Length: 166
Length: 140
Image 1 (cartoon, rainbow over the protein chains, first blue to last red):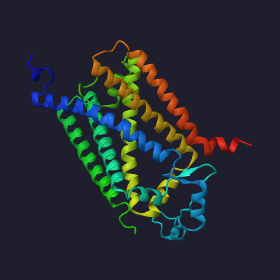
Image 2 (image 1 turned 60 degrees about the horizontal axis):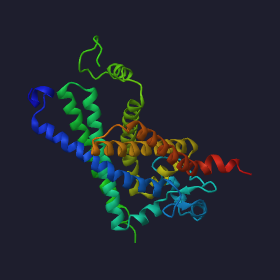
Image 3 (image 1 turned 60 degrees about the vertical axis):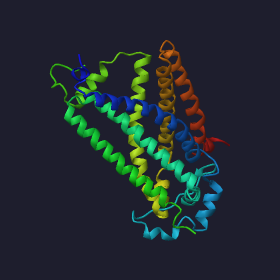
Image 4 (image 1 turned 90 degrees about the horizontal axis):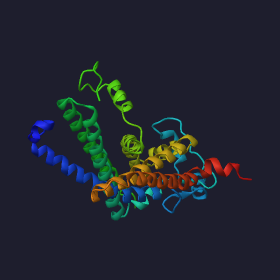
């Protein structure tokens, strides 16, 4: 059987899938490092987050924008005091970190690695459950378009962070 | 495997379920299934995460966004997120190592290793994440 008869794929498509397989390994390894670092920094206690004392002091001094409560587009919203021992992600801490170009590069890399790895994996899953070729190709194409839009939005937000300060 | 009643290639939920329940039940299949489920969950989370973080352009919106996730329920979800990341990462490393050396005779033992590493990460990270919400209030 020729390669085409087996799966209805052209050789170029098979080669493309082999590249995808290799890329999945590379982006996966990158994610183990970058996402591990990301979770450590943003979800577990460390200097990139505000401590409960710092956060509650910010609340008292109105630095967490309590005075703008009425301007909140989502209507009534009240800030929540930090529990003892809690670490809180704050706007100022994130923006402070993202003022460094190195952190911008790291976060954009993480974003692109995660999106490409996730979309590549999703197209594999679609390949397993959607047998109709044209529908599958449409879904995969839509997925990559969505991934590109999310990458655009993410990069825009990361680049803008910290630019309006100082 | 598709059932006869169903149109081949129809991506119905029933086709999906009948496929899922036709799988054998062993360690290798559990690894594959968990890898797939955690992968799908992480893609879903990633999309919500990126859309949510668009609020970083506005201090007030960002504050509201972050405060939403500071509740006991979301803290438990955060530990589940950590578990998904840890499992998917460790299992992915196992797959990459096996592929690279063309060997699979140790795969079951390596899978149990993956589960052990995941459990360790979830216990340590989970205790740290849940401490202010569930553990500190219980302490005298």
